[in-house]
Image 1 (cartoon, rainbow, N blue to C red):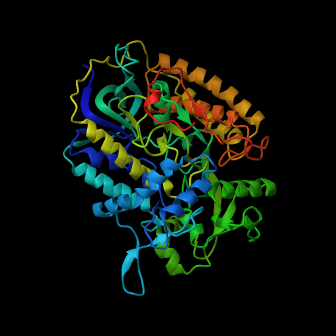
Image 2 (tube, one colour):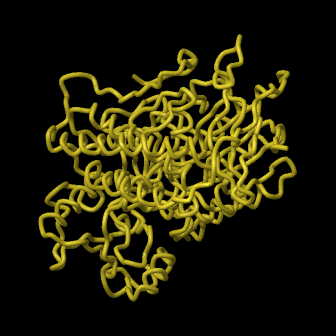
Image 3 (cartoon, rainbow, N blue to C red):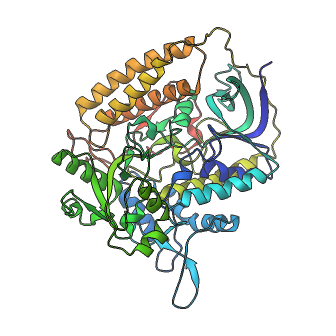
Length: 547
């Protein structure tokens, strides 16, 4: 018999957004958390920098709002920015109450306060952190609390296949409503049915669509792809943030060098030791990430070299060891002593600024379906994410979604009869090489044609290849038994198409989207988001979509 589970809330993803929401609703809901691997397989665990929030009397909400607007390139939604920033301090206090060991400093008065660092785009020190392993500290704390709660059940080594909606089930006389998900259990290779009153997508971003990325392997755009297939609109997928500084070493897979290194005086250098950022922006190393990434990309291409260098060795050994212990230790394993020499660095895909359209409660256009964290488009980031606003967004929107969900738990609910997954007409594949070949081809042409710098011709080439890949993958998906690699490849190829379509639509350069054919921003009309809508019907009037 097929396995079926019933929960009040199904959370797909176990990062900061999913875990914090689970903890906030667990006293009133029976919660399932789906994770692809063991815990800690999301991007949160690898976040080094920190969480931005107004925590100093030298700072203000107005300053944080203005900084975020400036970095967002005219596309950020002011309501989303104010909502996020004004709810920031309370969420940091909540994390402290849970026991997150944020770094502190001792002032001359003898008082110990949170140590605040500064990162690119910020005009004040407002980034709270746990040394250079903030994500790990947050993830460990949240997961420990979640595992101790009697109403939270973890389903590890599971990957969601698709959302179940009343429209897909052809259940009449009801608005399109999400009622669960089909989920592949990687332990027994069977697809299980999860019914839920509320489904929350907290699946992270899609940076694995690129050849070089700072993200873990699971960042394959699953939530965005599933929401699109279910009928949700998607916005601003052309804005892919490339982190300027990932460690360049053949064995250093996806190891990011936090922006806080530059915030604490790190210098970007050419091979001859000369600084160059002042030629591109008056803010130098503290310019927003899109400017720094393009500058590094320009110099690498100009000189025909594989990397540039980031140097913090002019700071004391004690300072480096206390502020950046993880980076220091990791670089030593590769024979690089950052207290004495610069680090080789290269840009890599880092953050997906676009995603599933939601309102300030995390609601999508489909009833009972929520999206929070990197998979969502809230309007906060606009055309470029400011450093450390992402973990803040995870916490704030998990809190608001939790409030909305718990307010609905008093209403009566009846689970509907839904079809189990049908695998009766598929066979085992004897050609998995097709998956690995297509995976490699996709990530290479996305890097070459839809990367830091784009052109119309490159985008056309990418779209042609993406269309061919989608045909191959859908044929494979229809005929053979599914696997986690196939599910992720199917999702990534769809997300690639959404990125390319969005990039082709924007005939200007703005924020993270830079085109050699349209090198300046179009200021002749009001800046608009790129909104893509699927063919399926959905309840669009119920949430605010930023036009």
